[in-house]
Length: 171
Image (cartoon, rainbow, N blue to C red):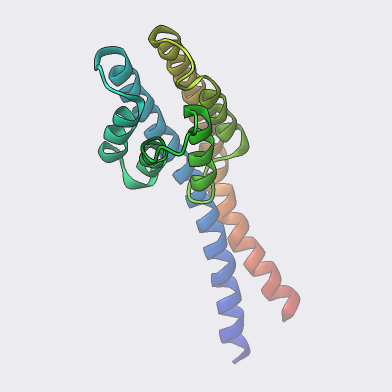
């Protein structure tokens, strides 16, 4: 019985390490998806004659559901006609999606900064804000990929080592 418990503790530690390394992978994936969304948004705002709600709704349907919910949520907020400005609707969408997306504080800061200019300027300034956000997201994605590359294996091994340490301490 004692051996089975030791094996379970070791496996649990290993699983925790793997799960944390998967979070690193997921962050990179979401950032890349956001980059794609903002590239589409640049095209929609620059070349299509559509409202913000329509542009964000289209993008939300085109991209993977996890990232798309941010854009779809924003489109829904704008369509509800509750008297919110675009910036307020964007902030509410970010708040609604904060628990579902594995992003870090600096990633959220980039998205929040984008919201401050959303819908309050002309098309040219809006395109400029989208391009700036794109550049910031690309930098975040590069940093996240480098962090993942350097630490993914470390977290896996730390999970195994932590499980082994607990087994040794309990034995």
